[in-house]
Image 1 (cartoon, one colour):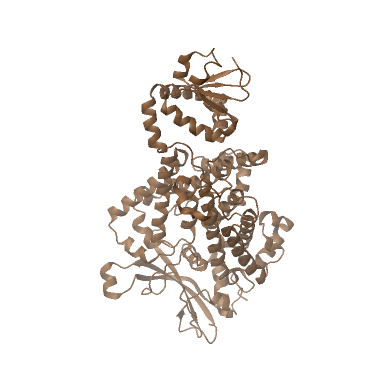
Image 2 (image 1 turned 180 degrees about the vertical axis):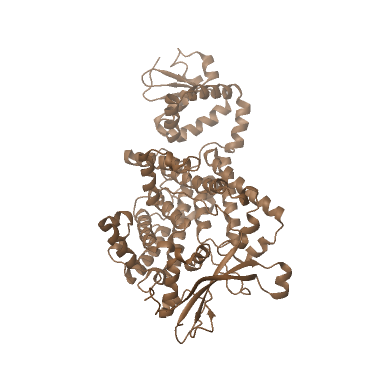
Amino acid sequence: MNAPPKPLMLYDGDCAFCALWIERWKRITGPAVDYAPASSARSHHPSIPPEKFRKSVVLVLPDGSILTGALAVFTALGDSTGGRAARFLYRILPGFGSASEALYRWVAGHRDEAGLLSGMLWGKSIVPPGFEASRWIFLRGMAVVYFIAFASLSSQVLALVGSDGISPATMFLEAVHSQIGSSGLLYYPTIAWWNSGDAMLTGMCTAGMVSAIALFIGIVPRAAAFTAWLLYFSLFTVGQVFLGYQWDTLLLEAGFLTIFIAPFGLTYFRTGTGGPPTPFRWLVWLLVFRLMFMSGMVKLGAGDPNWWNLSALTYHFQTQPLPNPLAWYAHQLSPWFLKSCALVMFFIELAAPVLIFTPRRLRHAGALLLIFLQVLIFLTGNYAFFNLLSVVLCATLLDDGVLSRFVPRRLRGETGSWSPPGRRSVGRLGLAFFIIMVFLNCVQTAGLFVPRAFFPPPVATLAAWGSRFHIVGGYGLFRVMTTKRPEIILEGSADGNTWKPYEFRYKPGDPTRGLPWIAPAQPRLDWQMWFAALGDARDNGWLVNVAIRLMEGSRGVGSLFAANPFPDRAPAEIRAMLYVYRFTTPSERDSTGALWVRTLNGIYFPPISLNDAGYR
């Protein structure tokens, strides 16, 4: 027998099903493996019985050895992600090899049925279409999200953490330094350690918007992605409670992966560089899986009866932080319909993420279900850029066969076609990074089922650092459904007798005022007021700072409100009253025109003045 110079895969050339899969493997292995019909190669390999080709593919290696069945396929796939993982499991996982060979024998003996199943799962062609368009769209989508995040923050940052803001960044960093010294840079990494003045804060927002524009256009994409991530991380650190939302951490994690997805070079105007390296694409998919699957599991894991009996949505639209105009109508839907919606939501959040790891058509179905859920959430609530960012991440599950039509033809590669994924090396350092990230993903997911106290100390420490730097974190909104809506109303007085309310721009206040549609921007003080109402004044010292700034006449903090009830002179005192709100019924709305009915529930904090002890 003649030993080939490189691995040679021999297959039944008369089998249409075999030829279909051979084309797929050719795209994966490239020139590293040769392929030939068995009929044309028998003269060179007479020692191989002809009947063997009817039962299995045959892989002839350069050393003359012969492999068949599943092991031949796994070996031929070489250094591709799937081939390497399959060979590893074949060697070390008991039962994997025998199960693989048994499945291969069944397929070989039922080729017509297997061909039908392949068409159902992969489509007319099972040749992988690649992810070049997916990468191009993902980078533009991340750029849009970054721009919205920086632009929305730029108009609020000084009022929130500026020198005259609610919780000044400079005072925060000084407090950190006084507590832990130079270690503060390690635990609270931010370039604001160098300068945390107002010009620096606004400059970081502006530079972030410029970086987002550069990423969208395709100018130094990897450097632009890194700069945007670093700037947002820096603002996130000094933003304290005002930048502690899950979409902020999600943007940091997705932005970190974007650095590796973005091509290295001066420009990326047109496609033509191929899709991202497969390991980095898989890390994005793992992020999508954790985000969606954990969102469903934490609701069940918290033990809230409102989720278990599917009644949570009968409260949600009324009690969510910032309802939008459609939320009132959604709340009026019948309880049985809302329970059905909760059941569908659980199905999407728990089942659709599993489809990420299945063949092409099932993966696409999972992606569309997840995107559909995000669209529904966007239509019924103001969740900043969370829904847009989630859709951008889910879009990476779609390949060029679906997404190529969304890239302008003039921006496609010179040939106007899409290249297959190919075998792109990430190097040893990249592979080590991939393994660590997969491990952290597994630890975070395992935390849903195993208490963290049971993790070995090194594992717990590594997971903690991954969460601290928002490289791999946990997710899950509304794990416990609030059934009532408390609202804080700030009131000022010049004489201690007449009190005037400070109306917020977007959160509920005047019951007759309409509901806003502000997403994907985020009014961060309005959002934080929702959380404050669920606690008490002792846990929300920043709210007392809001009152102090208003009594000092801070224009920055005052700009966060819809209007200033004291335009001529700042109030002498401010108090916080606590109300309970509920949506009006259709008949109540028809008769009064109001969207809300509110009932006074008590005092959140009593009147304070600048002369009171402790508020100087």
